[in-house]
Length: 364
Image (tube, rainbow, N blue to C red; front, side, top):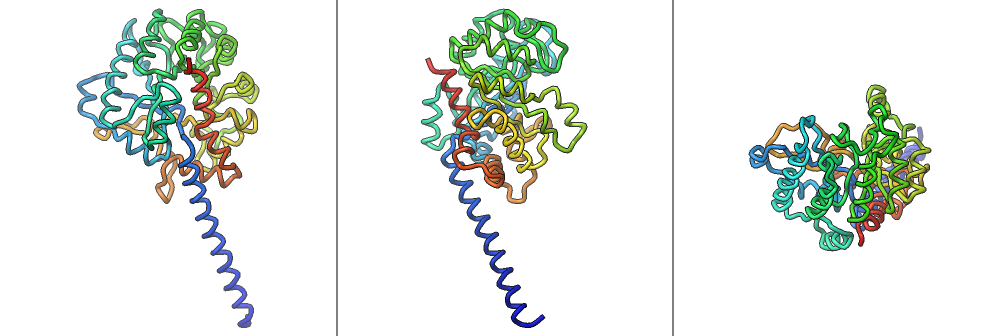
């Protein structure tokens, strides 16, 4: 090879390397700008505190630190009361109140407030302060006492998942992983949806059968959310995991019903082995329901107790192993840019779509 060819190869390699460096820097700058502008939110993030106050007192949670690292402005701080299984009437309500009491303390220790309306969200974002939407997964605590929803509202609850894994003692509707018994919503389930509409609580239909979803869409006068699911066409590479998760996924036809009613669907990180695969799962949902009807709902945990050996649930900021140790929303935004999402689209999916229906559901 003559000197001229060698020189051309070196120049070519330098140009390619320079382009790659410039592209990486450009994406990094875009990502940081998006995270700064967006009011990012995870529509389903677990905070399952212990049903034992003495145990809770020995634990600490760096919720603020993890949220700051993630790039998200807010999480829907969610807990459930049906694990372990409930044994008697009244137990679910006791667990519910205890969990709220413990979260009061946790939020105070982290200097974080609950968002009661969209104005609270805007104020927190302007001041660069993390904030949470109080959420519960499953209406087990209600039992046959509809007035408990207003008690929950007065304690700051603004996002209510109607069902969870186990059936309530007073059923609200059919769960998607169980054999159907009620043909959709029960009479009590209808009352709960109407009461949430009246008070200003966003109704979450995750874990509901298709018939239950259809009934709730017909009953509700406010937009609803399915906070954490995925399309049943996006199964990933783990066949065993895909088979287990299949009953929890949504069909294109059902997803379209939700979006046609003005609702929003959260895409979870399950069945995605990398940030890029997660971004593709989001894109697949957008292709079905449109850019205005998709959000992020990871079904992970932003902060587990620093003093416990808790193993259930993946840490949000460690959803995937990445070399640069970026926070969750930075990583996801970068992947979305790489597959062609625009800044405005990422801001909508990252938070704008959730906040739109949250505002509609909670405003008086």
